[in-house]
Image (cartoon, rainbow, N blue to C red):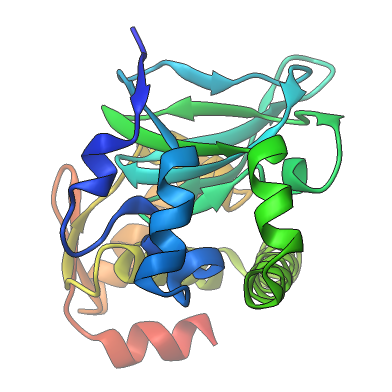
Length: 234
């Protein structure tokens, strides 16, 4: 069961409260962050819980303080389409800060997670009075749109092995550039994310291992040749 609270746990993280983990707030001064912090709430979720579901009202920006979140949609036939995975420091629901709208996707927690949120009615007055924050917000939105367009190009234009390479580099970056990292979900779901079959995903993963680019264990990947992986991803 999700547990709500004021974001005291975030505020007491001496080096990186959740607001400072995302581009939208990372450039703010400590005093500006202190002004925002009382407006932030945190909720602890258990694996499998929904943060929100498609069709529900949207009025908050969400920040992943810890854990992993999956954003997905359901087709008319009930088939799941994975849009993206979110990791510590990622934000979502940002369009809710600009206008009232319904969520067009599901957000589900993949492991125990802490998610912070700030409501539109609390955030807008502060942004309107702070030109630097408004500018940071526009830059963050622009970057997110660029990432979305780039990923759509990856899925539609690149070969399966290139898509897999880009996916592995994404996880590499999100895990602090550690050469070994765990896959956040089963391979079947990762295959769906890069628009291929589980069989093709496993075959391409094995091919990268045979080439000495990666090493694969049951739940983790070790990058052995980062330069080759980057060249493959283009």
